[in-house]
Image (cartoon, rainbow over all chains, first blue to last red; front, side, top):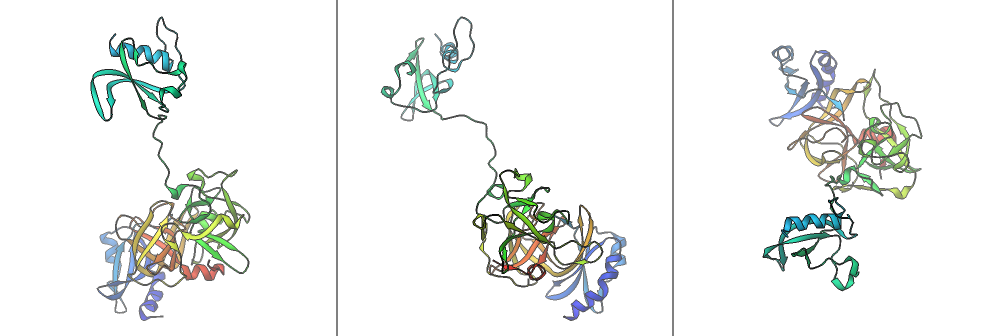
Length: 70
Length: 309
């Protein structure tokens, strides 16, 4: 498991408890792996509640809307 | 007589339209009557003629004398054109929504009690070959029972229990409301092995299974949005997904972003997400307004103990 995967695993349960957060994953931004936090809507409140980075791994907030079975 | 009046007489004599002082009758070959310039080898004459639209235009010697259309009616010349049958324009359903045998990946399928989803592909174990799709497509979100009929096309696309049953539900991975889910998957066994083929419509034969890679280009062929392209933006997502029975948490999922438009929509569930090398990387099962979510194909194979056929 990579460092980013370990960091994600340590924090995902807490992040998913934050109201408005619908998912946590790993993506790439400017060539570097980052933690992606999926939110149903972009609000100033949720942006303030979420970290900019986790254990030196950058965080990207992604507006996804709600996920549903298709 | 003027062409329009002569035409009214013809409507009565050839199409059976009622008219005072005349006995209506129907000609077996005439489907319409109109007024137009007489056409001959692509050129139109100056004089107006009564135009007869017929199912089949034959040489006049091949037409019984009683059924021949006279060259002139009430002093107005006649013209005969072949129109075949007139009908309203019904939309032709795309092949993705139709009954196809042998059935293949990409087509409409579903448990008899759901609307419709997508047939993913064929998988096999030591015993038999099966059709792979989602639990919520083939097993109605844990509600289905072993042996339940599976329709191709699905009910929403006109699939009927008396003529469109492809096979029966064999097994599914139960969706767990309390724990972490890895796959939304189920298997159906065709009643007749010749009724299915391992091809995926517009993609071809799958060349095995592998893990997805971040930022790789992928394709899928599904019932609703058909063949689309996307990019793997996340290959290890944990997320909440809404179902009719409530919300389930999935882990180690693939998130696909669209190249243009949408990568998937309702009814595409069950489609296989395929890499540039023709290998299966995911089993599509959900999405948000901006993304598509798929299970990793490696988890699907391991959980159901099958491999791609």
